[in-house]
Length: 417
View (spheres, rainbow, N blue to C red):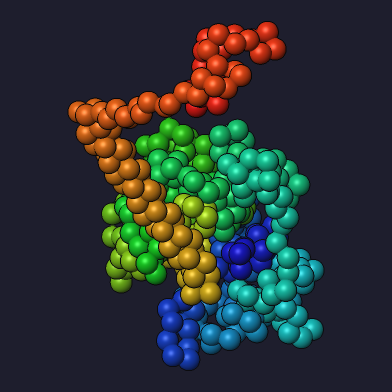
């Protein structure tokens, strides 16, 4: 599944105007914290345009006193948060003229546009993935051959980081060893991730291996240095800068900065990282090569930095501000686990029969050996009875018949011996 907001944000970024949204769930209301991502984007791409961005913010949002506003859940997710483009000043008109040409925004009326998280993505197809079926080599089952028609990415300018490794995460080659790990490609992050083995467990009475994954530590792991925007700007453990991937200043991490450097937790109040709620976990059945239970969780954040050229950004304390996090999961029910349980039942029966046949064979060999040993201690001799001879017969002793000498033994008697 694609990250639903990425298309909208990427398009807006190309026009130097991005609305980034983070929210806290309530029964009917989402308190949306909307921030003009224009500032961070322009600062990286065209810092000379910050003055224009400052004027556009004041024009479109009527000189706001805060970077946060409150919106309803339906507006945030589907209907769209209003961007007031009925302005007449140069800065506002310049931004809105480009925004109106964007298909990722909703045209509410002649002047106003709407930005939503799920609206632009609804009903759209993802990029095409071509993978091996494993008909000739089961080790290649699910392995991605090309993504979007290319055998590798052109994002990080590094063969290591641009490599497309593993599967799409829905299936893996069977008979994997635990030291192999589970390698999958995450298009949302423009990188491949390896889940490592943690322990053995059971799911619905099926033996499985438990795997977990993280975003690593680019500041210390030499193999991950190519994910840094520059060698001198690598983020600390648990965070990944997606600027090269989605062309906006967006950070990825596990929710609530779980398994991240403690300094990120200190910058925001209210975070409570929990492995069960916020970690990436996979229960993997090796015989079929299928995840039977999985949770993929990612949080997206923005860097908050002070900027004297923008009025709303004067007094910021530098920090990483969480926007929202998403979760994808799978729980196989009995419809899918029953064939696996039947398979393992058959394997148990075969294993038991194997040992029964082995024990029976050993028992038979033992009995045969015993009987053979006992028969070596005695033997029997058959009694031979004398047979009377009839010398009156023409074929008696000394007679010759047809040139054959029987040495005095009658034909009938000879046959008996």
